[in-house]
Amino acid sequence: MEKIVVCVCTRGRPELFKRCINSLARVIKPEGFDLETLVIDNNDEKSADVSDACHATGGAVIRYRYEPTAGLASARNAALETALVMDATWIAFIDDDEVADKLWLVRFMEAIERYAIGGQACDYCGKPHNSPVDAVHGTIRYAYPTASAKWRRRAPWGSWGAVDGAPLDCAGTGNVIFRASLVWRHGLRFNPALNASGGEDTDFFRRFHALGGRIILSTLAIVTEAVTMDRLTLRGHWRKAYRNGHNKARERKTSLRRVVKRGASGALKIAAAPLLIVGGRTIAMKLALSGMLNVAEAAGTIHALRGGKFDYYAKVTGK
Picture (cartoon, rainbow, N blue to C red):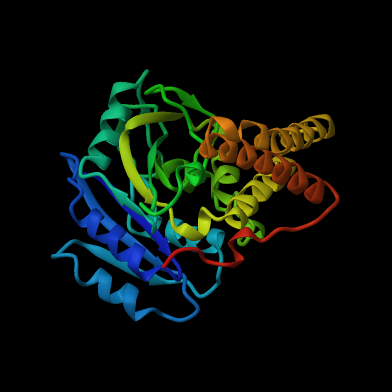
């Protein structure tokens, strides 16, 4: 029987983690699959909060591993290595600040079957598979604090698309499932050099795709992410956009001309925002925020092109 191992890496967010792990205990197991949950504790020391949450989920099967090396890539690599030892056929990742829909995994497996275009054998587990879909990225919805102003409520991460079954050339670990055989066959791992800067997941899945892994989008496999207030401050928005600029420079997805154009566009938006105040404060503030994000992304790109580093995840957000 094929096995799904759901991986959660957590650090410094015990309250959010508890919500996440409780939601996973309620997720419906797809018919014909074994299911286990794997928790990677990436705190400075083994966390009693994490351990207690793992033991308070009503009998759900949960494996625990402590990974002392701090960083996103190190934690995710610990998850990969442990999931392979657990004989996972499919490996799923969800972030510790997300809550899974009850049909999350069922929708993943439905998408894998629905968009099959042939068959392939698995040299990892020795069993035949009915689908050549190697990874599915799900949909992330965002839950904003009720006290936050509407103009601040911008999705902290970009949309992966809105067409079910659409092909993708990469994915993120916030909501994804992928075939373990490709990881095992090629020794794929997350890049530890990106431990604090982020972007280790898109880097991983771009290599996964380059090795022949077929990735598609599911609009029905849904998780909900809690967006905390510290990410909605002007500083929080600036840091996120600045980091996006860094990632684009690293992935060579931009040019100096685009950077200058984006920065100039942002400056114009900021200058024009006060003129729209007659239409309402929300409209003016949205335009000003959009301009600020353009400027921040341009600044981050320039900083990266000049050899600078930006450790976005050096500080944990949320609780």
